[in-house]
Picture (cartoon, rainbow, N blue to C red):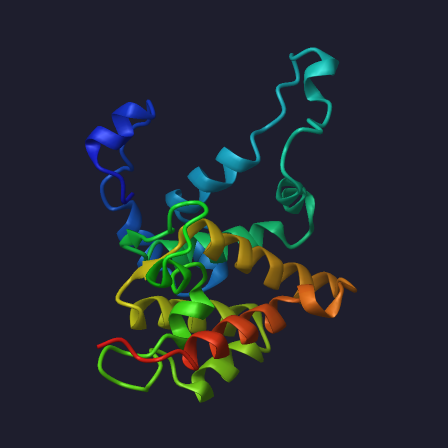
Length: 206
């Protein structure tokens, strides 16, 4: 939805249908998001229907796929991807920094939490207040998480590193629904807190 005609042509992709983003943005709950054409396009792209006529060998799990692809098989996957579709529909600029970049300004854009904690220009105040960040950290339901993530993207002027944003949403749903016993340092809440407060403590830009 954000790519130019030239970028789409280079990737041999067709542009998104007119109105697709608007329908995603208007859908204010996960069930309504799942009824949109934008969500269905995303879901079937990552979870294609198995061709019953294909040779059995072709239907085996591809062990070369990234570990994140396993999320598609989780019971919460449709909800998680509906959340991703709804949040990313509000993003206008993918600001994923170049791989391996150590520039200060690029480090501040490596995650949505870093961007939230980064001080506003000529100010010591973060883009997202500590109170609102804590509300995001302690979201009690899927719907509340969706609402707070959308609010954050809009507060960041609709800029976000899309791939990392999607990965963080998947991690949140995995921990919330499966209560995955992960190492403390790998839990999304701690990662976000570390990134937010590291960015918040940096010197404000001038």
